[in-house]
Amino acid sequence: MKRFLVFLLLLGLASCDSGGGSPEGGEQVNKPVKRSLPQGEPVNILFVGNSHTYYNGGVGSHLSKMLVEGEPSGNYFISDLTASGATLEEHLENEITAQRLQERDWDIVVLQENSFVAYTQPEVVPPSVRAFNTAINNPDTKIYVFMTWAYKDNPSMYPVIRQACETAAAGVSGTVVPVGVAFEQVRLDPELPLELHDPDQFHPSAAGTFLAASVFYAVLSEKDPGALEYAASLNPSDAQLLKMVAWETVTSYGD
Image: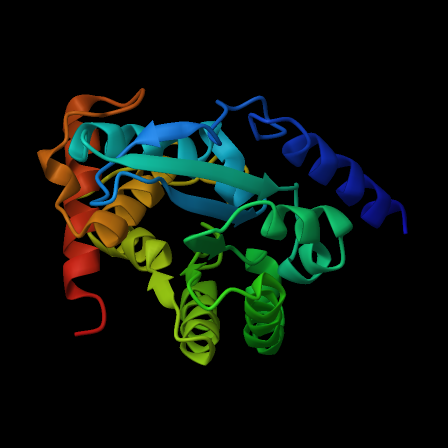
């Protein structure tokens, strides 16, 4: 009960203001962002997840900057609904989630399951994603499943998380965003000595969050993030390597 009360408090903090900033004090991301869209209306994107989504300023914040640069004539509205350690089931049980799902006609809802749950209880991920799809109750909303990564000290998590996310996405005709695949590519390549994990070994480092955002950009825009100058706080050469990995991951995923 104590953990759930903390969850409610954090969820409220992450969601109650119009800026939608993360509990970590990250940059606010639910504001109109320039992006290409033929009719000139914003594409509304909601990220639902936990600290894997909001760490280092948030995946959505970095993604928005990439979209501003890569599609300057367009319009995106990116928001997040996050709480530390939250599972999709906990989000579904919270009335704030129901309110946020109905406050706007979301074009895309990104669902990020707790990685430990996806690894230890992979069977719960597909029904949680299906329940979200039902709760959204909008046939035009597209579901994107954020495939997270293995903890640094437990690479065996990767295939289990991958399978859980792929099964969940298939059950709602959704799209997998293969961030975990990109992390695994870096782990296996000795020529890419990039640290993607925070010192705690499970949260992303700044490079890990940047890689995640680059994968999202490649999936959403179908464009190579390597053409972008944006590098966040990273060394430009490291950022370029991460964008290369993201593009190679997305273009080869599913082959």
